[in-house]
Image 1: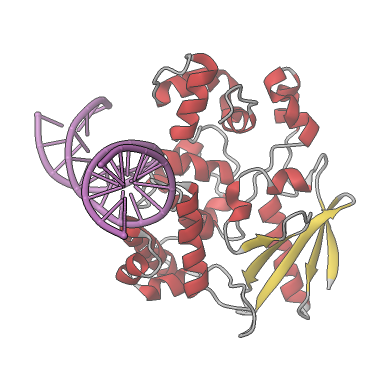
Image 2: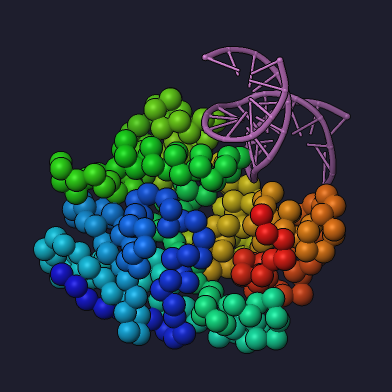
Length: 293
DNA sequence: GGTAGACCTGGACGC
DNA sequence: GCGTCCAGGTCTACC
């Protein structure tokens, strides 16, 4: 089954999926040299489907091999809409970028949208798994969670969906540590899963929250394992760009851009982007850095 | 509010 | 092959 979803223009499918590293984390998967990506999703009906996504005139083409009823098709469309931010308006950001040579590629790439997971719970888990480890470690931990605990499309299929809060809550902290190799992060993921599965914490409501960014930041920081960097990253995913996710890479880039490679702290990063106001997170994200690793 | 140390793993390096 | 060191954010205890 194939259909198309329209995006607010300008829109570049390639730009969204390459906006950060999420595309390399399961259950996203793709073949090298292919313009098409896949995401293995678990639907509310507990059916597991592989969703194919590719550039299409005016938006994105969606493909699912399984037969779908009307409700399932609508659910997939809603998920894809959120994942790619199809209706988001970046005209103000693009106007700002027009006046800054270091943001030239923002206009060339129609950049601004950031790839996200269908459930914010998944984005939170993945963000916690990016902390205090290298990218290879993050990929390994996420793959372990998906392959060990996620539902499969069929017994013969190699692709699993991301496990639900209920599934992860049932695993237990010790197994997350020993089997999924999450290390000290295991109790954080376990606690979050329990809170969400029991209904005590509804993280999905943050997607459409009217809270001020400072209050939303406070809520995110209440989640164990979410510190300053992780909260800023999650705010970016929620479409709030007032914060900069300052990690070691950010310190290195800013240091080489303006401080001759001298050691700096988060306050220097903040100061350099302060003038960009509510867009500074995106400005930082898409800045054309002079220093190349 | 600021700071130090612990947390865990994989990779790099020296022997 | 083995041992040691280091990088990577967050939490907690302490000042």
